[in-house]
Image (cartoon, rainbow, N blue to C red; front, side, top):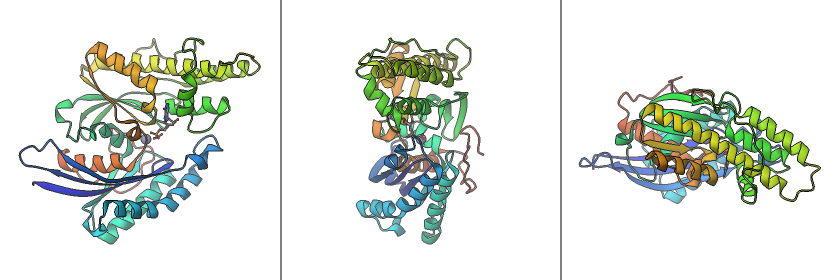
Amino acid sequence: MVREDLILGIETSCDDTGVSIIKTSITRDNPEEINLDILSNKLASQTELHDKYGGVVPELASREHLRSLLPLTKQALCEGDIDPSCLSKIAVTTGPGLKGSLLTGLNFAAGLAAALKKPLIPINHLEGHVLSAFIETRSYPKRNFPFITLLISGGHTQIILAKEIGEYELLGETVDDSIGETFDKVSKELGYGYPGGPIVEELAQKGDPVKYLFPKPLLKKQGLNLSFSGLKTAVIREITKCKSSKERYWKNNIAASLQNTVSILLASKIKDAIALTGTNLLVVSGGVAANHHIRETLSNLCQAMQVNLRLPPKHLCSDNGLMIAWAACLKSLFQEDYRIEELKVRPRWNIATRD
Ligand code: KG4
Ligand code: ZN
């Protein structure tokens, strides 16, 4: 054995508390293959708490993280049968995200690291999502670089070129709302709860995807930026019109048409990004990547362009502690200029920069 690690990963950037413990080892013969043992992966969801407000309430989220962190960490240690003194590192998300939520996680992790005299590794949440696509293959994706990541979540909609571990270029992003926000808002307007994505997806199953021709902002514009606020406004206008309608499946049709429009927009920009960079791998990550229609659309595109596609399993698309522990493992093993960054929260931390 060359190197063995026991890493505790903590994620509190938004509304889910994630705590995971992984055991990793690499051998001298095959350093790119990582023996990964997921000893525990615990999640405390705050969905019910925020549901009645139709979105995440930052103050409530921080308070709930504070409540959950200690019991969840105890459960993770117990499940993995780990004595805390055996941990080799503690990794924690320090940005981007909600300031209060990030501070709660960082303070908890820093306290634990100081008490146990273990190194504390700050992780960029977006880098956690990017690298989560390689958890299933349990490998260091060296030969896959450079690759494109489409990060679609409640907080972000970005097209990122991953050049190396720790080296990323932002190729394009939404100029207004994220896709997740668009789904959440439309779900609320249709009279349903939060998070809206899974609700819209379920409604769409019985809907006609071409019933409404919604606008496709920036589709014909050059560049890889995206925009969703005009689409969102058009959908809401249609909902207002339909409320007096006697048509049985109007909500389903709206959901299906929205989902279809979003898929067309994403596929078009990803097609351009692949052509521009000449990469042969697309990684899709973030909560919205759980959407079946979007997965299928991107899968068809990749097949047509003969590009490999890597989609994390649905439970790893949304926020979790495992991706934070895994990112810490890959960075400390394989990032050439790796150094532990300053320990402070960065609510607007851009993946392409160190600040
Ligand atoms: O990555 P994530 O868990 O948290 C953030 O970092 O934002 O993403 C949450 C977002 C929410 O907006 C939620 O509505 C959306 O992901 N989402 C979905 C689906 N599941 C979750 N959107 C579309 N289809 C889904 N199946
Ligand atoms: Zn996320």
